[in-house]
Structure formats: C-alpha cells, structure tokens
Image (cartoon, rainbow, N blue to C red; front, side, top):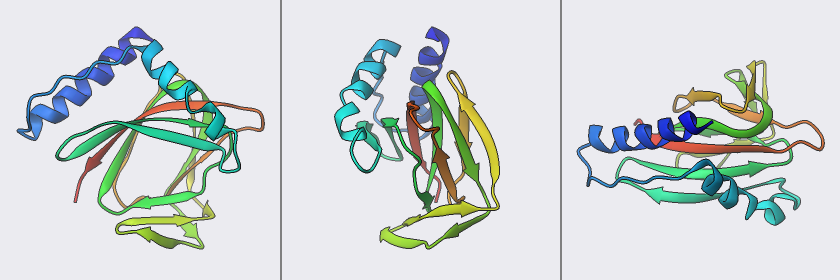
Length: 157
C-alpha cells in the first residue's frame, strides 16, 4: 500500500508540473489519509452516508479524501475528470449509461438518483480509476460496508 501513497504523491506532483503551476509538493502517508477519512466518520454515518474534505486546491485540479458507508447518487461533472484511488474497502462503480432524475446543483455539476444501463466495476483497496468529464457515474457500497478513497479532480474542459 505504501507504493499507492507514493504513486498518489507523484501523480499530484506530475499534474502540478504539467500545468506549469506553482511548484508545491504535498505528501500524505496512508495513515494520514486514513486518519483524515476517519475524522469524517460521524458525518458519513448520517443520512447522506458519505463525507469528504478537500486536501488542497491547485489551478487546474484539487485533491480530496472521501468516506462512504452508503450508496451515492448519480453524478456528472461537466468540466472535471475524477481519479479515484481506493484506500480501504470495496464498492461497485457504475459508469456510462443514463442518469435518472438529473438536476443541476451548481454550474457544471449534475446530480441524479441513479445511473441506469451503465458498466459495473468492482473497486477494491489499491485500485485506481479515471472517470472522464461528462461521464455519468455512481458508487454503490454494500450494506454495512465502508469505502475510503482519495480523489484527484482534474479540470478537462
């Protein structure tokens, strides 16, 4: 798992260098990411079943840690791609297909009740996934499960 954390730090640093941004190097150990995610546990136990916190914001991307105990709703980010790195747990990612009951909640951000007819992929500890901008997606977590993931949101459009 240490390799995953090193990869995350390198990926974030590489994105910074590629965008000719202010050279900032951030480093989070697996235990630091886990601690930050666990601090969200009380909020994630609430009715929404999830919580997240931004770790840092850069000119064309930002990083987050997220904790989920329940299924998420469907999402479309019109301008941002998501990179998920699974820190702990397991979930099913549904991508593509059609978003049901989509509503714009803020500029470029659409939320719905579910993704219908999408592809399903099981995500487990150590996995990484890239979800391009404008692709409907939804995370499903088994009853009683916990899914902890590091997110890099990169502006693509």
